Structure formats: structure tokens, C-alpha cells
Length: 251
Image (cartoon, rainbow, N blue to C red):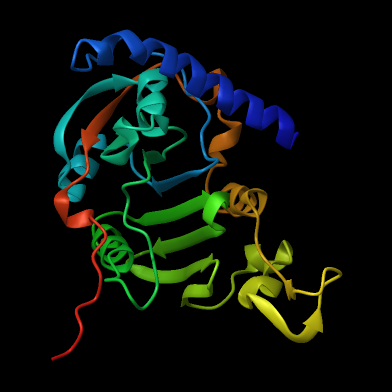
């Protein structure tokens, strides 16, 4: 199943990338506005799942720059593109009452050395929408995260990177316990050694992130044409306020 999902995501990105090539050669991108069906995403990606059908309200809440209509195929292709993906996010058409905001420019919890821009974003969105969820799965740097705002309250926020747990708010949820994820509250286990002599590491995987997403809302790697009617989303530049910022040293 995991291999099948990975292939579907790869094919979606490959098709979109092939479409982008001639557009970028001309110095600008013209996004197609022909509605299409949902396309899967999720691996090596960050996204919000917001319980709303009002995409215009989401654009306003996030203060996105230069939003324009875009279909699923080119939107997902944009956020996975090596150059465009650095600055752009894709807002999906609603899927079963959820609107996705997809893209690596989304604020990430990065630890004590960096300004936490993820928590304020979720708190702000939580004051505007009934439920807001955040996910990230990025194995190249061993970074995995999930968070849930419900009725304006942080129910759970968790992130782990190569340095250990860097974001932990609220109690471990029932859904995490059902998956055995309570073990991952610790990055390593002291006084035990792995087979290779290094620290024994307990660590989430991309699949764990998708399982939490599936329990809380929707697993985006399982989106298919029948998940929602054909529609148009929005592609936009991320606001400058989302850029990574180091904490300033006290004088």
C-alpha cells in the first residue's frame, strides 16, 4: 500500500513538472484554470487541514500574496517544484469539508534557537475556524510533526527532529496512543545501545504522520478522483512573515 501511494504521488508531481517546464522557460508561469480532480500529496511536504469550505476566508486569514486560480495538478506540481516550492503554497478546493494549504513555506517549529511562528499561526487560525490541523513529514532531515486546534484550543502539538522532540504541547491523544506513538515522546532511550553500537532511536515515520492525519481528518496520500468533484484551488506566495528567523541574543 505504501509503495502504491508513493508511486501515485510521484506520478502526480512528475506530470505537473512536465507541464511546468515550457512555462518556466518563458520566464513566468501561467496556471491552467481547467477544473480537475483531487491529486495526492503528503510525502516530503507540510500542510494545513482547515475545516472550512470558504477558501477565500483562508486566503485572507493567511495574508497570502498574489493569489490566483490554479487546478490540482499544477498546484501540487508547484509546491513540489524545486524553485517554485520555496515560496508558494497551494490551497485546495474543499474535500469532504476540509481545505488543504500545502507547501514547505508554512511556518515550522524549529526549536529554541528560532522564533516559533508555527504556534501563533495555529492560534490565529484557531480563532477563525472550528478546527485547524498541521502536519509535516520530511525524512531527509528526520522531521515529523502534527498539531490540532479545536474550538480555539491547542489539543495537541508535537514535532521531532534530528535533535529530539522540539515541540510538545498538550497530552498525547487517543489516536496517537492507538498507534503506539506515545513511545515517540522520547527521541532516544538512555543506557541502551542499538545493534550498531549507536543510541537506540524511537522515531516516527512518514507513515505515522499519515495515520494521524487519517484519524483526525484526511490522509492526503489517499486522495483520488472520487474524493471530491473537479474544482479549482488557489496558488499564492507565502508572506514574508513566515520566513525562518533566528532568536536574537540578549544584550
